[in-house]
Image 1 (tube, rainbow, N blue to C red):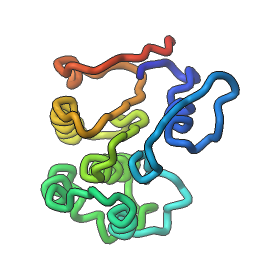
Image 2 (tube, helix red, strand yellow):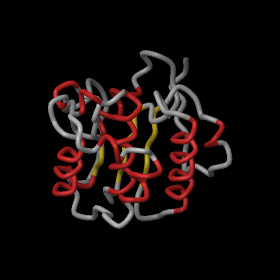
Image 3 (cartoon, rainbow, N blue to C red):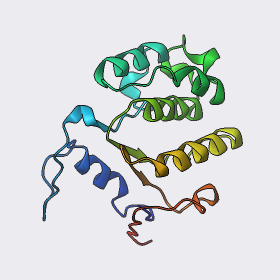
Image 4 (cartoon, helix red, strand yellow):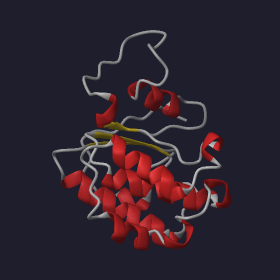
Amino acid sequence: MRGGDGRGKTRCLRLIAGRLGAPLAGQIECSLAPADIFFEDPTDPALDAQLASAWLSGLRQRYADWRADLEPALVEGFALAPHLDKPLYMLSAGSRRKLGLLAAAVCGARLTLLDTPFAALDGRSIRLLGELLQEAAAQRERAWLLADYERLACLQGISLQTEIDLGD
């Protein structure tokens, strides 16, 4: 889903995730249980005091299909090992986002919603996220919905099910 500032990308994701109640007009139908939808935000200031490892531990319990076997490689790929025992307030925006992307990749949720997933990422993490999304595009068990301002270069070769353009 693409769109400029104020076009409703985040609101749409929140509606799909069931975080805003009913839309003002129309309807959104989603037959998935909350545990089948990943829409987590480790940049939320309410989580500042929580250790990064504790945040991940809470998600492991919430998502039954969590892929713990993939976690170590992604901790390394996103360079998160030195940050896992720190409270979230000590992590940069990029590291907090990488923590969320790690969780998104391993959670096993049937629907994963990502809001501006490339924001505040370093080049290595952008490449890794691009690889993860290429793998995700080939899966049939999980769906991913990304909301961003544009389709980034690392996504150009990925065949998407659909694209939604909310305009500028």
